[in-house]
Length: 325
Ligand SMILES: [Zn+2]
Image (tube, rainbow, N blue to C red):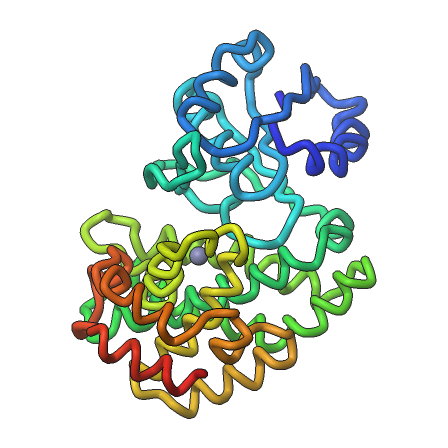
């Protein structure tokens, strides 16, 4: 049973059909998942006859489609395989589903014991996807390194967490090396080594890191100030609709570095952001200092800061923001 986004399935349909031709695998149907990853959407899919009949679920698309398939797979106890059609997030490889309410507001994080049985990445499909997905994905992915690294600072780490923290460095290094070329190749619709490296980093490395650093559920090192900054700004009317998550988080990392007292690293990351057109100032982001000030009370309360080596105050955020006008 193939479940996915409309555009995603249009891009993958023919390739999937060809891939299973002359094998024991039969695709019984293709179904559009819906609009949001909600419990209602999953419940509706779970009642469909071909979904009930299927032995396995092929999840095709971006984050929301794949996350919906995870819910269906868990409820119906059927294995799922993921086919990400954009390189923008780690939904295809992670064992987490981000669930929304029908009105589009956030509802729940659902953690699973199992991730996809296999992740199939077709470089050609990724190369032909709209550029903005990869662009935003770069910011959200390098944030994984900076946030995990800070959250785990000074901790005694067990084997898995230590592995996750070390691996997180690749989320930054790989993209610094390949990000800018990967974006150009994406723009031209060309498959290249840089594009494949960047896509693997965004889709796979980040997913593994997120699972490893939260593996035993006692302490979760995912999240940090860059994400708290984004979720705080989402209190501004229309902000969420007008901004890509990864682009705001990319800027949030600059702020995080200043709060952490690392001016030099902030400068290095700014230089990188300029090469890929990610924001380096509040002006680039289209946000004023006053608007940041309005949102700092909710930023400092955000659960992304629940585990941090020091207390982040509103004044620390504003001071950093003033340096990033
Ligand atoms: Zn994110």
